Amino acid sequence: MNSGKNVINTGSSANDEPVFVVIGKFRRPHGIRGEIVMTVLTDFPDLIVPGQRVYAGERYHPYGIRGVRPHGANMLITLEGLPDRTAVEIFRNVMVYMKAEDMPDLPEGDFFLHQVVGMEVITDQDQYLGRIKEILITGANDVYLIETAEGNEILIPAIDQVVLEINQEEGKVLGHILPGLLDV
Image 1 (cartoon, rainbow, N blue to C red):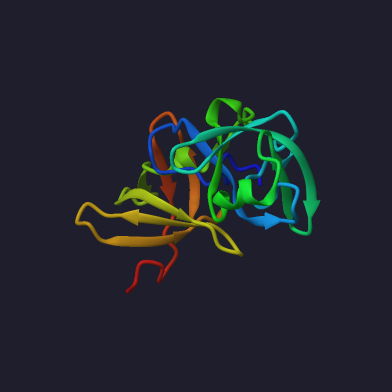
Image 2 (image 1 turned 90 degrees about the vertical axis):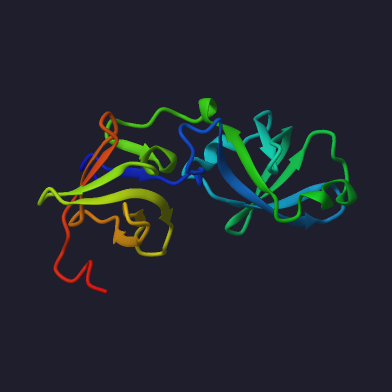
């Protein structure tokens, strides 16, 4: 899609320019040598390599990656200083982050999720819909959850026919409302 509105999934929070972006989620220990299964939640899995620093949990505790290997659709990760299953048991279902500054620069017209959350949505008929509160990741396409000025929520699909333009400088998304899209 080269329409100036690619949004890259990092799993980021809705804050202004977060310091950290989600890259995965630790699931469970694997074997006895300190490996842990990680579900990858980034469009940049090639950044998850030995020597890379990651941050685990809500307190962003830093760890160096000692080893990485594929495990089906997931990865097996070994962290420095955590030699066995018992040591990594604490990471069960814990989110894994990288510093935003360590993420690659995106091509012109592409955006990370955290850059779109909070933007105002205006239709091509000059109707103010509200602000993007959250981006729901679905199998077919992303869905923007918009909070109106009245506090209601609107869902719009993030597809070319609906999201016409994302203007990061102005913090606005230009949308086109297809017939029946806002009907309740």
